[in-house]
Amino acid sequence: MAIAEDMGGYYRIAMDDRDLNYGKYFKSGEKGTSQALDYTSHNTQRLDEKELTELLLKLNYVQRAINGESPEGY
Image 1 (cartoon, rainbow, N blue to C red):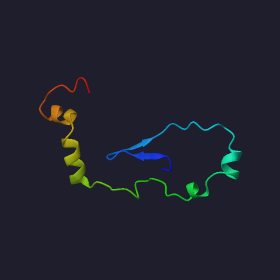
Image 2: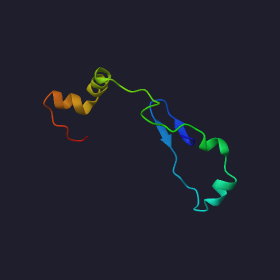
Image 3: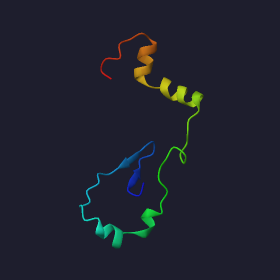
Image 4: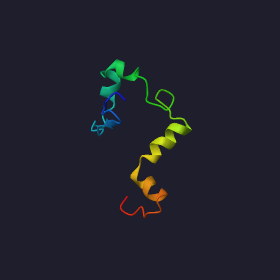
C-alpha cells in the first residue's frame, strides 16, 4: 500500500526493485511506512450479492454467455 498508485478503479503496484541488503531498511528506513494500514478485504468497499451481480452483468464475457454466444477471444 505504501508504494501503490491509486488509478481510480484499481491500484497499480510498482515492481519491487530493492536490493537484498535488508539491514538498511530496518536501520535507516522510513518509520511511518511500517505503521501504514495494510490493504485488506476488511478495510475496503465490499460488494453484496446484488452489487456483484450488477458488476458481472456488465462484462462482455458474461453477456456473450447469457446470449448463448461463444466466449472465444476472452
